[in-house]
Image (cartoon, rainbow, N blue to C red; front, side):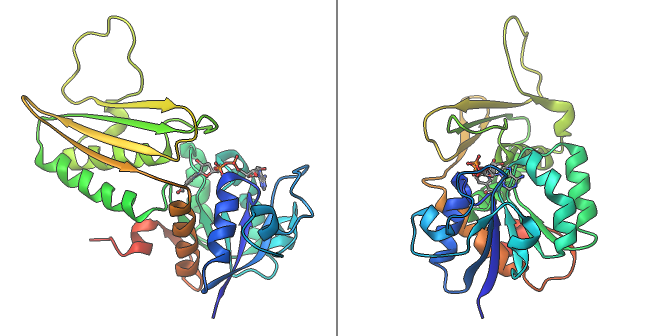
Length: 268
Ligand code: NAD
């Protein structure tokens, strides 16, 4: 049986890739597509708009209508729109996969609250590779005691939030492995006479340019050597396929908050 999916943010870079991933997945079909009020995509057929095939549901700006016949909703709109859409998702009452990134602590709390009513996956990165990298980073940070941890991420010039959700997840993994509190030790910018690096600092730097889908490197600097753990996304299809895998996994699950480690079976 194929899982019926409603894509919110259908006309975006990720929305189009998710439409193609659904189109090419025998276990999924598009049952609804939503974009913001005033979007040029409204009234178009999803698969045609995404350039992956003929037909598909008509894109609407009405979430309840778009989600009406769906089993699962996938939202890749951005932190602010996702947060504003939460009351509609509660009304729709369908399992929800959230791929948007850049949520504030307060916005994350609201998502947690919603997961007391419906099943929700919140995953700043949907790729298998990144989720395996998170495991490796945590383990390396535990083994490389006293090494200086630094992280650099690069994304395309249209990305709105910084550092990326993936960078923050990697920094969290490194902090956890090293037994450090990320909030107390993260350093997001260096400029001027800043003095020597503090031993527990976790530096997180951001580059923006061109059409980079997403590169992340965590460095562990020691004396006379360093280890670098790098993930490079070649295209957005890796995230889109992950989002569809997550949606299929979430259909029929009990209410609660899940992540990609649950979906991919990476929980220890
Ligand atoms: P984008 O700007 O290309 O697309 C966003 C789409 O959402 C647009 O079509 C926009 O019109 C639509 N939208 C905005 N407000 C809306 C609303 N209220 N209701 C319905 N639709 C609305 O952005 P993008 O590059 O596709 O990225 C979207 C989000 O996904 C970002 O937060 C990004 O960081 C995140 N992302 C996550 C992953 C992951 O693996 N989890 C991967 C890539 C990107």
